[in-house]
Length: 225
Image 1 (tube, rainbow, N blue to C red):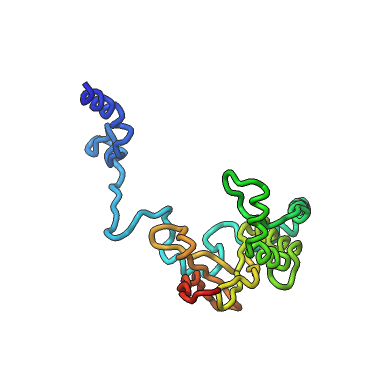
Image 2: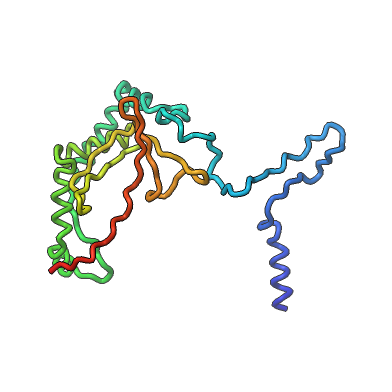
């Protein structure tokens, strides 16, 4: 009985999980004024499934957002010429800047407040991150820096931060990068590659520079006391 029940359920749900066919039921190619069946889709060998069909050679596009209708200059013009839009942007900046902030360790399940406070005092990264964020780029305070970051977010919807690192890999400063000269590059299979493999093309005074994420550093085997 168990086998027949499974077969009955499988037959009932088979139309749901069956892939769509290439022929339309009731359409006869030889009938008069027939709408005809659609062209059968084909896939070249070695080409994976794409998230959407982009234009071949899209990475050769020089102008950022050149393949869309709304460009970065249009976004900038609207945010600076439409008074109501600018008021909303500046109001949101004020609301974010007025919020107090503090760097804390992540609470662990079942941990008491005293244990979390002791663990926070013993964590050296807390003071490092706090010192870094007080003047993220080494020039502006956090309030001014976050206002510039919010400007890129609310106007262009494309904030970008470039970390400046020391030889040892420690983050020295967080430099803001303007969004208009940048555009992400696409891969042959998907339009959004993983962060470790993502390329970004930027324009510098008429020339182009393509940057990629740094390779992971080899861990040092030197012991420290």
